[in-house]
Length: 466
Image (cartoon, rainbow, N blue to C red; front, side, top):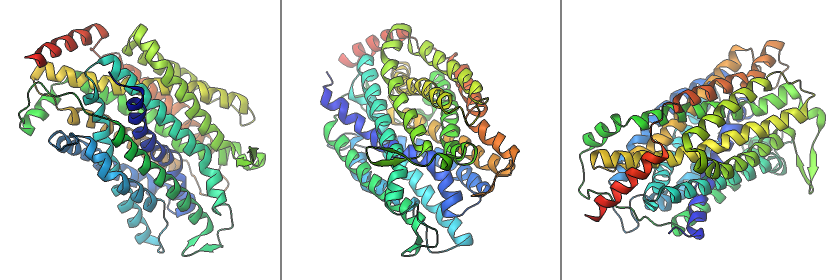
């Protein structure tokens, strides 16, 4: 029986990851173009190149984690030893070096690649931990719900406070004001991420301390890597979830990555000034992103009761088709229709929030399906596909954002032409709608129903008793 303390402890891990993940998704593109000083096209190409490589790196981490043996288990040691590197490299990613031209681009490539690699090295084991904390599908649903709930709480905090923190560290001062070798805006961004990085490391330490590994495979002996890969290739539900996961992340990453551009260049949030709440100055884009995270939490809370009644597959499909329709309508909003913009952000985000705990729970089901079918439980390798789908989806979404921004004629910190504005509007509407629709099509083919999983769980319990 998983106790409340352990559910919360597991949630702390994704709270940490998501604080960085959402900041990368919402702010890294505009940091590179408007603060760091790279062109949108160069950033788009960099995201495509580095993330494709990093996606390939994820299964390598999964294979290594599956073969790890320690007094803390297979997956928990990675949370302990990589918490500090995770935070440190995140800080370096948002630091502007005292160089220019080619060397600055090289620095961006190196730090971003290292960030995504350490992200994989800690998050693949963290995701895999779900599959060995309990053999009970209902408890896994609960763990996945806590995971996603805390993930969105972390994202909400990070996105809500990011801009006020940047300003408090001098990020809104003129670019000719220097702090060391960095301009005041560059230092404001770096200092803000440094604060968040410390919080992320502490949360991973707490996750390590509060969780336990319990599930042992039917076969204790090590299997050759080629067998793990062969079993994975023949795991049809895994392939379907991989496709659905990639499409879902394309849907999310395009919306997140273009939000600040949407409010800076289309809505013109500067015309509204700061919105003060409890003495803290917020801007529209920050509030919009925070509303999305709060709505994501509602989606997470709804996922378990709805999916327990109607099934994971039906719940996933309903969420994605509703998100598709709402995203199409979003394109037609004028910048003056702020109430409608925020209401639809909440509705779309509820749909998005509901599908991700279902995905994590389904990956655990795929591990059980593979173990029953082959006798081999390659949990790390299977769960690495979840991280791989995130990276591929994010790579496609953010690369498209950078490349299309350039194609639409985007000029950093300048006045945009009408075609560019139309393109920026598409990033929050029609393009993510295509990703949501593709995810819906994939999940229509998912074969592991609740009835089938009950039979699989019962058969595995019998085998483990032998």
